[in-house]
Image 1: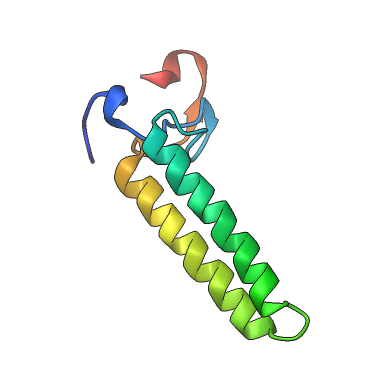
Image 2: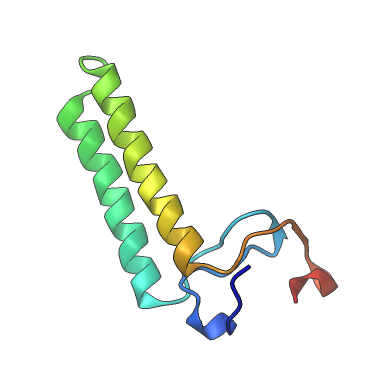
Length: 87
């Protein structure tokens, strides 16, 4: 597992559950903004009712890249119950 100080993570772990929360660094906000814009552009340019396969592929690729960046630049994910489990 990756180790490091929480100050280095772009995406901190969620307090409850598995995964990442809201970005804490400007780089994380840029990644999140680019992801949202990409998803909106895919939806606008491919029109899901006309090109469903292209639309699905665009969304899946964008989401996979976003998750990869979260995995590489975020706090190591694991199930958390809050409270003392935050360490």
